[in-house]
Amino acid sequence: MPSLVVVKKGMFRDSITLMKLSKQISEQKNVKQAAIVMATSLNKRYLEDIGFRDDDLKKAGPNDLVIAAEAISEESLNAALQEVERLLSTQAAIEAKESRPSTLEDALEIMPDANLVVISVPGEFAKREAMKALKRGLNVFLFSSNVSIEEEIELKKFAWERQLLVMGPDCGTAFINNVVLGFGNVVNRGEVGIVSASGTGLQQVSTLIHNAGFGVSHAIGTGSNDLAEKVGGLMMKRGIQLLEEDEETRVVALISKPPSASIARKILKIAESSSKPTVINFLGAKFESKGKKWYGTSTLEDAAEAVCAILRNKKPRSIIFTKSKEEVTSTASSEFTHFSDNQKYIRGIFSGGTLCYEAMIVLSPLLGAIHSNVSIETKMKLENVNKSVEHTFIDMGSEEFTVGRAHPMIDFTLTKMRILQETRDPEVAVILIDIVLGYGAHSDPADEIIPVIIKAKSLAKESGRYLSFVASVVGTEKDPQNAIEQCIRLQKAGVIVMPSNAQAARMAALIATRNKIIKQLFKEKLR
Amino acid sequence: MTKKTLLEEKLKVINMGIETFASALKNQGVSVIIVDWKPPAGGDKEMLKLLEKLGV
Image 1: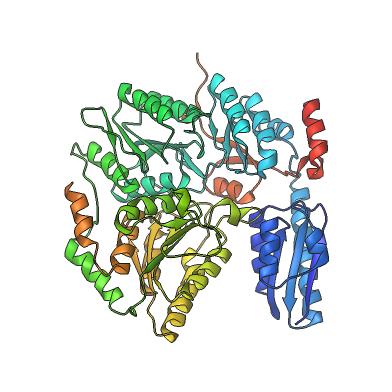
Image 2: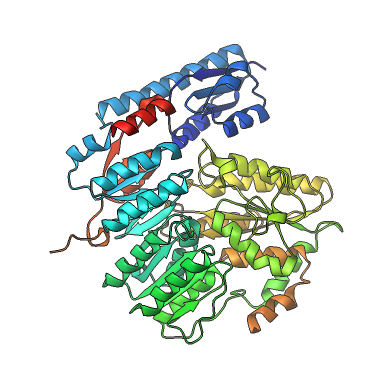
């Protein structure tokens, strides 16, 4: 079948624009497949994997745009190429017509009272733009990743001295004054203030608070490295200060992966002296909170539950399952009863890094260590991220899957390929996934993922197996995708949908172990 | 009088990079200016270092 690869030297378009363009062209009549991407090494490998091999492609670099297409005839191929050229130039024409400013300085002339700059340019250029904004007295939401820790420290120290916020680098979401920034969910306005070093952690906690009938005043993202020793938790400290001064906030929740010990002590000291009750979730880190003014929790769901309990004047409790032991074991039985004898492993395919991490924290005591590209233990780190072994949980949002590609919450291409890859392994019993909704995320994840789930289930059936799918949906009914509708559609496709990531992980383990871990699970609750 | 913090102000945003973020903000009724960002110095790292030195 005829194919072509065209390299446009020095042409730049952002990854989401290119993803949409690729989709548009792929859906054209007579086009078998098409991909329009920046030529990063990840994208070049992806193009090679799907069959595009070309000398110009090999030579192309991350600042070059590549058009790759395969069609049933030369004629259709040329038509597709012309369409790409037309769409690329149309976009350029729209931009020119809007006479957009090309620098921050020019933008400030149009909007002199701007107070926030949202930056999502490639990491190597991000610090430069962020520093320019800070020097102009503007707060920064820095979505870009691949910014060095030295650059992060420089930005945050500069901001700290001027009482400004730098949310990021690598900050996925924030909720300020009822406005969602980056990837974030539409939640009720309320009395809970959140500071989080984890984007999906923030999303999970805020949506669970919303779903329990409460709301969020502000949620400040800090970026994932903020609580590292060198960065010193500067933006978490600034966030706590801001929430302390904020009249609307009654309870504060602090969320992060485990910080360095000295930074954790500093943060706990601040929480102890706060005038507002504080709930802390440093995933995987245990702190004795008895007799303290703050309350430590072990999962994101427990953090949300604790915040709601405080607002209800009740004692916080830990959640294993929302449903009864009988109900969950019966759900698990209805799945594993169809397994063939050697099906025993869980493959977790996550778009949320913290959700992947939390699932490993929840299940490691029950299943033993879990292999991963973002493993807690060095010895469990996958040798080859493209090949799973035993229980493996993959963070598809990690750098090796995202350089020059849109995040897996938007672009499901690699996630779908991974699901089908795991399906071929006869020892796989359960595929565990997260579906993250909200602004910034894909407009209809169910529409992307359901056909692949159906295909995977039918492939397993053809080989005499049954494949179980367990998911959690991070979202609310107010999100543009409507969480309730998404859940119903997934359930109709045969997916077991659980109310939180932690519960989904436990359900996956119940199914994979054929309910063998039930005693251990509920003992955990009694402890 | 001390300067108002971001939490006390109505957001007015300048967006640089992924356009979806700007559209999402517009959908929420936030004023946004989109910067037509391109890699400075055409992405040439050496040239970029020189520009930084010059404070451009």
